[in-house]
Image (cartoon, rainbow, N blue to C red; front, side):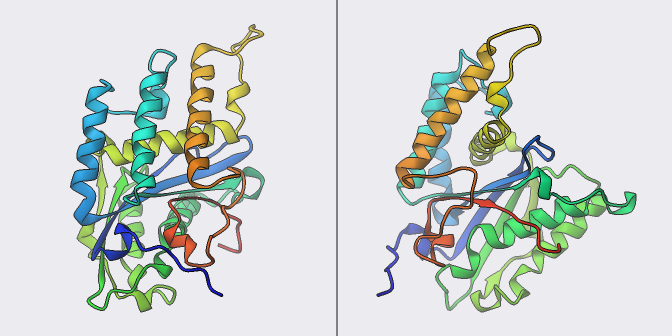
Length: 280
């Protein structure tokens, strides 16, 4: 018998907002990290209000970032991450992380195509990681809006990428969903103004940090790790415990099994995707 998927707030929305970011693009073991979250548009304001309130309470400043984690702020970042995962547990937010093994990343491209792998992977992440092909079908159509942390390349490359993203509703895998994605609704934004992007940055940074074994790094000439490295390792472990509350026996190094398959690619609150190149 086919397992029934429990309906949630996420299944009844007419519009969804996706916040996406990227991290380490050249790691020792894993590279090309992309991360994001998807929220129902009609709930986004109250979600952000709760998170902003918690951030203000903890006095975390204008912007939270993985790179700003220190021994002194560890408890505050842990509290903020718990607040973020409370939104996942309540069914208000879903998070996706994608990365590759470094040995399987693209070979060096010609100079004129040096940005292609980055944008091709980003496109795959947006198209597939959130399970859009398996979201509930709305007879009136479903709108999407994307908020991308500022893209690192030229305006020309960014415009081309946005054009491909805008065409997603016409792709064979998504055409049946009647998605509506206006090109003007694909925006580059400053993460300082978006608490959801900041939360994604911390989770994404933690995964890139630990999967590349940066928790083992010691300062030159020292036999012990630095305080910041230890703090980041503890924050990673805290994040892992939060993920495990949603997905017991979670393994960060492999793609998270879809439960149920294939609807779980949409309905699961948190998933990892170890992307393997297949002729991109």
